[in-house]
Image 1 (cartoon, protein in one colour):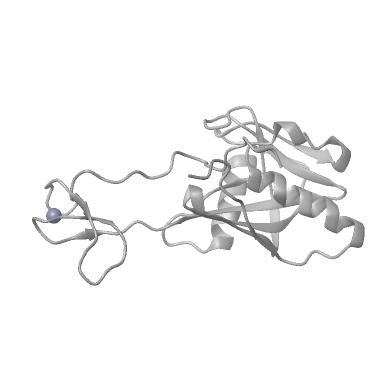
Image 2 (cartoon, helix red, strand yellow):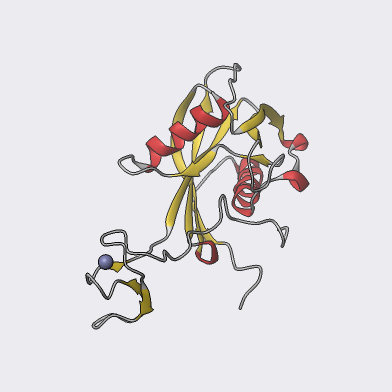
Length: 195
Ligand SMILES: [Zn+2]
């Protein structure tokens, strides 16, 4: 794996400075009966928990080709990615993966089974990639993509991929294609800059 390819889609959420309930300044402390630091409002008592975010996407397959999008947004502008993005409130992981495919590639797909589940603790994220059958060659990439196109296995731009979760998902796919079986792959992306 490329050690310097980032895993973040956007900068990690930073601690809030002010209470979203009363507007007072927050204090970083370990609340009673807790075991780690939280952003606490000493004025109204609210504890502002922060938890990992889910990134959901697809590995879209069209015959012997896969679909990639070239990013029109930072970070990793101009790099290639699988259609993926942050899950929204009120949707399932599968719905989020389909929505992102529509937004980034404008591709007609039929969602397949879950394939990779990737813990990225240093980025405070968990990534989920589903298989998808592409139903039509017609693509209508949205404003987040410079272009969307199909790649044969030997055309995959390995050095121009946006994120390590994308690269490792594609690496598993290429390896699993040899055996024709695609079990769920669950793994962790380690911190490239451990503290
Ligand atoms: Zn407050």
